[in-house]
Length: 418
Image 1 (tube, rainbow, N blue to C red):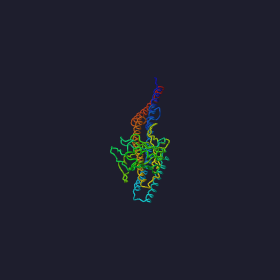
Image 2 (image 1 turned 90 degrees about the vertical axis):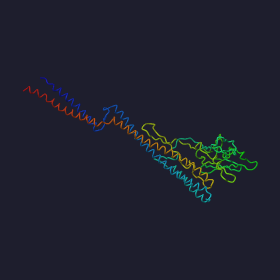
Image 3 (image 1 turned 30 degrees about the vertical axis):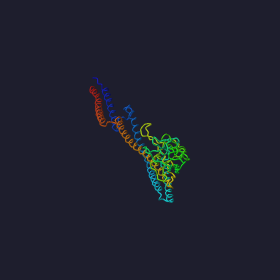
């Protein structure tokens, strides 16, 4: 009788080890919650899931970055909200000073408040900061070279420098009625100081009448002031260029008023000649300090935003003069321009804030979906693995029982020896 008890025991022992190993792996997966605990579990899956984890954490951090960017924008926009309030108060005071019910002392008192409000706008621009970064003093503006301010007024297409004053028409082609005895006065502000030039249309024989003087004569009169470099017509457009480059020479609130010999303002003529807008913005040289917000998980996924210089010097409202009716009138135009500049900057900041809020929503959605995809690769299917663990447990127990039986087989040999 030949009994291969060693073979049976070895086979059972091998099966027991296999079942025990499988059961151990199942228990490891169930206890960790991960299908892949080491590279050997799924080498390719591990590499893919690690790449996904990098993207997920990058998306989550990009969402936090976007929230920080919104906080920075809100800080700047909040400061500009107060700047707007101050400018509106300054304009209110300028309108008040324009009224001839005020005495010289009254206007002096108004001037004192105007001066202080201008200084506060300057302080807000210089001291508003986020995380020690100055926001409104130009340090975080886009890079730029020095530019000299140019303002332009486009007249009716039939107008030119050679057009005589009695032929001046408005935008609709209607004659504005410039006549002998009218005075044409241009006023503007540079660095808060008012400047003015006047051209009078002759009334007596031998003087220049409305039929003699041309639109170029108005330009030439303005150009005689030291703050104006050139004033000339290009086609139907009157271009006026500042003498000094940068914001120091910026021409603020330029308007042209026409009055009759009786001192009555001629609205149609004044409006036709006063429709100035900036052609070339006054700029001071500065390096690029604009902010790049990292709003994606990968290199180059950024949003660039610049914060423009919103100080009183740049807005042209520092030391703004309102001590006379004429100065107050010019100040109103200067403040209208300043309010428009601040409105434009606040609109830009608000648009970027709204964009970033959508960016955050998109980042959070992407992170959620990518986390689900990574989970399908990396995490264990608990129900399936419990089934596997139960199966392996049964096999392990069965193998232990069979090993015990295999170890009992040699006892049969002893019976033959009795």
